Length: 189
Image 1 (tube, rainbow, N blue to C red):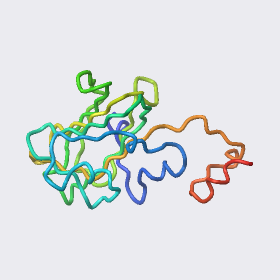
Image 2: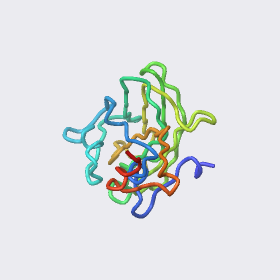
Image 3: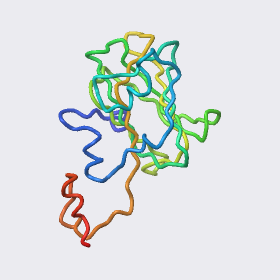
Image 4: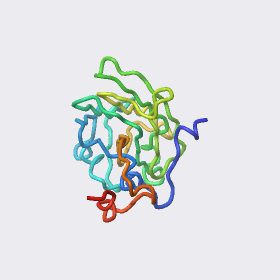
């Protein structure tokens, strides 16, 4: 069952594929990000720089928290986290918790995910019952434990996706335009 909730993306696929296809949009840039702790020079800017060679490194006791606060209630359908067990070993998260709410004091746990030596993008769908997305003011990603009982954690990238709804163009009958160059031709003017 856990394999249904979390799938590892292998090969050349990444979260940008779904963004380019127009199925989702990245909304992390619309949020205020904060961390429970970080080593100097390894903060939130490393999580959001779109470079998988850089990383956030926590500094302190578990759990390590990534807080994502939106200015308004936002639809969230999926989270992608990039980790690299081969490089980070004991710094790699082995169990994370995804929480949602309106502020720090009312966060509810949506799901707990066990990761087994993840290398690459980890896809986490966010659901509320039968709904394919949730509406929230705040997300929290909590690292509960690391591989090999590591104390600090490394996360290399996090992308937050919202579903794109109501985009039905006449030319979609012929298929989706997946490249940015062709997406400008999805409508007839």
